[in-house]
Length: 412
Image (cartoon, rainbow, N blue to C red):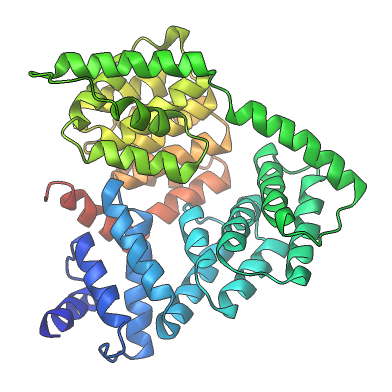
């Protein structure tokens, strides 16, 4: 108990905590004999852990998010978590949405459902609508929902699905939610919704199967050969590596893709995989967009400061598709080191897609590029959402946690 009390004092007082120490705190606070805490202390603890989780990198994200999940099952901690996520979703300029919504979807209390439903039916913007559609899809898989609740969710999702003013990504999220609700039966869907579901299903199959099996096999085979050539001693052909690489690059399940990438990053092959990805990205002239996206994502998980150049080349190339450029900017935010401000500004000027603009701010924010963020925030010629996004990343609590975690990368 003395150790837990010392950890709590550091957590509430702003001292450094290793990501694994959050697991010790959450385990201690969710036992019947947990340490007593005032509500204000719960709020401070939860707010700090939410911020840390939002800017955590690689495997260090997992114990922090898991600690939040454990605390979310505790009535005393659930309330401040829900209130904090509610405030994030009401902020038009919040730059990190999916993780807080995913957390909210896992909290087994009515208050979480109420907040999640309110932001679904009255979102402050399309990004929040998109995130809450995903959140309800996750919640429907983990909680028993009544037929009435499922019908109300299906009605909202159906209205989004047939609304041509929202983006294709948001309509796809609405279709995913309806698909998650339908197997339990009892839903009534209007004819236009059923027709649009068929359209979205065909588009989904085409989109999520963008890499033909023979292409995926060739890409994975070339990477395995490149990794093997870097080994000093090759005992036997590794039967697992091709499967993990394929999942990390091309899996349609985000969770499986992320977990496969983290698994590779935890092996002695991490550096060899990153080197092979960087070399292959340098020769991407004949590479499809979906293949490039998968490689850029995985390099952000397995790479280090030596691989920033490969990602910066992708981001700087005018021929790079917006989806690949956005992923390159986010992956740069996950690697040690710093990208020249001129490159970030060039990307902001060249790529007007909102996803790329947010990704550039993410990359700059995650690497504590304060000078770049100040320049963008003060530039009157830039869109107000971009300026406010830069100011969001300059918030004191975020800036402090980013700096602390940049230091954490150098620790074991």
